Length: 162
Image (cartoon, rainbow, N blue to C red; front, side, top):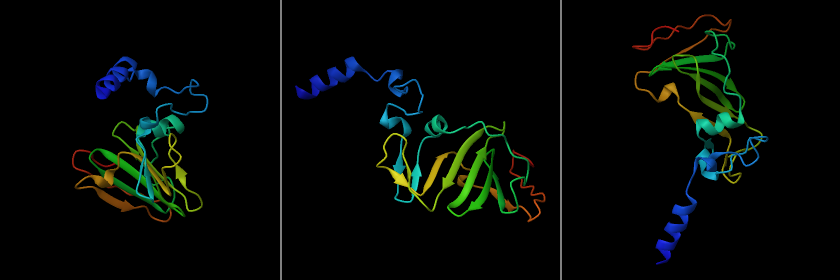
């Protein structure tokens, strides 16, 4: 009987699309539903949904030109994605773009403080990861840019040179 009453209350209250909206119209970018970010941590890496990441960060960054980020850049292609990675003290900073040039994945790291889940500060990590990544694809290719920012032209079957 208790299960039926609980189910009835949840059914009446529902899980409307409003549960994913910020309670303050987004002024401080908090998401009212703690499950909306899908935060998980293995103690080192904090993984959140890409939608949640974009609710808290600008995801309209431009598609970089080949090897334009500096000499420590690595370019990986695979599954129709292009990933630009630059080494930092906190680990690689990674930005992943799809074939149309839209950002679809991000990884950031720190060595000074824990990064926290936007909807549950108890879930933390030193690396924040959200979205898709080219290195998870079979057949991904990687090349390192030269110290002077010279060309790096990896190819992927079906994607072509970048």
